Image (cartoon, rainbow, N blue to C red; front, side, top):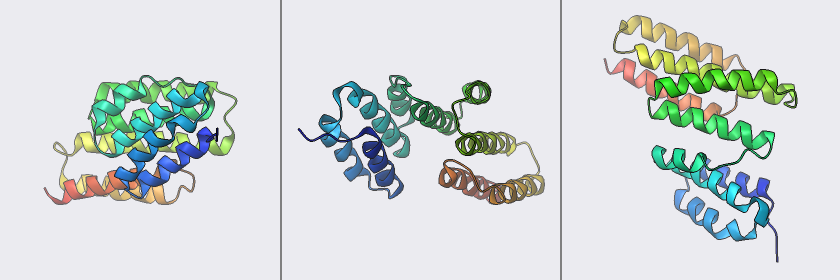
Length: 184
């Protein structure tokens, strides 16, 4: 039987989701699960399906599936933790978001297996996601001009940072913040 490597499976799903080919991606997730090594199939399937549900704004289902993923290696751990952060952000789960942020910072500092470039990418994702979350939380209470100024500063800071995981997602959150500020 032909074997599909887990990394290729996850990459194909990531590309399909980035291209917003949701029907194709869901079909791929189900169709190629059987080609994965049996020892890794369920984990990869649940992670990819959770990613699919996140991208199609079915956050509760994404969260439910993500909780079944076992962190078998550092890549799974980083990817799952960043996905969880994005889900908490989307659900406006402030307490969960902040707790997860703190736990992730500790995880990064304690884990010496993470190479510096990968460390930087994920550290920056969490740092900028927190700044977006904080700005989003203040929008209704803060003057429009101050919110706009903070957004412009955040955008500039992100543009000056070359290493950020999930940069496209962060850009979409900045655009949402900008739309919210302009609508006021």
